[in-house]
Image 1 (cartoon, rainbow, N blue to C red):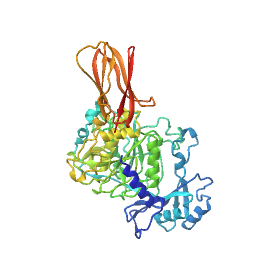
Image 2 (cartoon, rainbow, N blue to C red):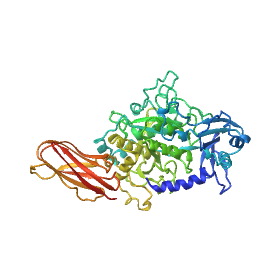
Image 3 (tube, helix red, strand yellow):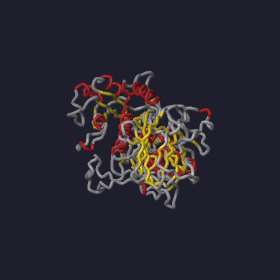
Image 4 (tube, one colour):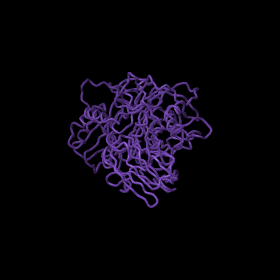
Length: 565
């Protein structure tokens, strides 16, 4: 992912969150439904709510007061109705994760006073800069999709990204879970049900938090929006009940539709599970016929704190949030890769959360590898994936073909899940490196967008294929064991290592860094007598000195090699 993301984001957050909302123009606001405000820069957020983050811990707060004089005075004119700590620290310290202390300093303040949340956030921040890191509205997002002809049954994208070849290497892992931050899903859909992640540590009927994760009876995900967008509420049922929230059922199939079950279609994630976080309200059709997505930060935290390895975000907006960037960094540190849609404006613009640092931004392409007409393009885009005419699951046990970066993002997320399945010890950085380096270059087909479509169109096979291979080198039988010097040396990123085995032997050749930590195993199997060449791709290694060691029957040898990038 590009370092430019971090630089651009830092500037934007400084302008939007950390220093308040600067009036470079006269703000104009309008209501898009009874509870959502749209600012004239396109930002969407809940009426009557602001989120704030304190620099230090806050003790002694109540549902109506922080018991901090300056902050309470700043809110006093605006009729505070409720204060909620967004992410209370878990009572069991052993269950706390990196960044939980910072999340515990975030509060949501509901108020009924006559002032726009943008303006109130600016006021609160400016009057309390010494104790508050940022203040911002409670942002709302739109899904990045366009309904298409539901009768088209092609799944060209499966072959386009070389999924069939990838599945010959890995068919996913039920222990690898994709968190779907969306409008919910159709949990009993015949092509989704078997891949829904269930929390077997939770009894769904005892009204008790059995696993002490802060959520009572969360046995199959969580609903962060509820039935009524006028009164957002949480419950333990992320199943969707109306077509207003069917977006999440389509993206679920794109990521990991049940595969090889004789019905419907296939999902790139194959066996990987789906943790459903519902952020659409059942009765909300005010987002162009569909629900807006509410309180997505809560779902992001829930997902990474409950064991997912990948998170998909098929939604976005043009305004960055300090709250979301903090959550993203925590997720990355927890070993999670987030994929997000680049947006459907057909424009050269950054979109969030896709453009945050440590998020894989996914643009959309057609069956011919041409940028989809609707897809955004930008220097912060990391990869492309098929997003035009994608056939997938839909609410009420049906299927449909839709367009959107909403589709390309979960297809990418499913590919990331395959990488984690094949290489469970990989770090997020290594997984993303494999994803980027595995892409097919499509700039020859898109010359007007050079540098704006990331590394290219994803290729699942290239992303999961082994980084080393062994082939026979000559037909003679050597008289003794031997480990040759790699060539070329120094190298970037590929090199060859010859070795000889005089009799059938169990052979191990591994690569170590200068601290002695094993970073790659090139050979670990019984080899018949003969001469061999090990091919090694060091794309995941940084520049520096490494050592490779052969161990076999009564023989061991070590040699040094240099990676220069």
